[in-house]
Length: 90
Image 1 (cartoon, rainbow, N blue to C red):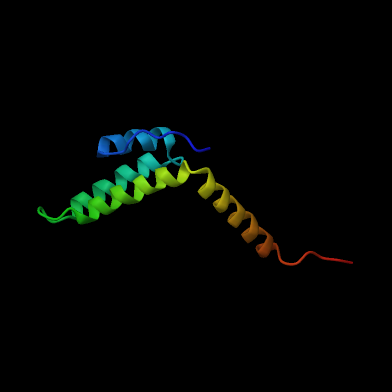
Image 2 (image 1 turned 180 degrees about the vertical axis):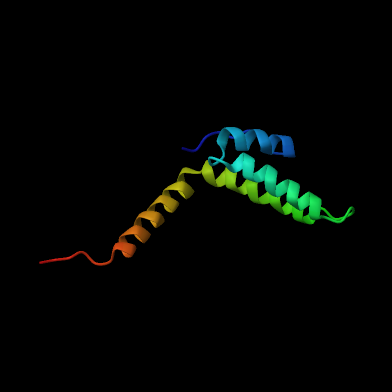
């Protein structure tokens, strides 16, 4: 699944990357979280908004790394096996 991602340098770059390469629904959640962070920020401190941008940039990178996605899928499968418990052997 690794794709050559365009460089993500601006918030608009990130928006485009989320729309094209992100997890389903990421773009909408990003916009909501960014708006909330900006709205709650002091006029001279946008640290929480920057944290939202960094987190979603990281999500795009994760989504497009075949190694990371394979590891996540393996972990989910293993968790499902543990959830079911030991197989009934009769």
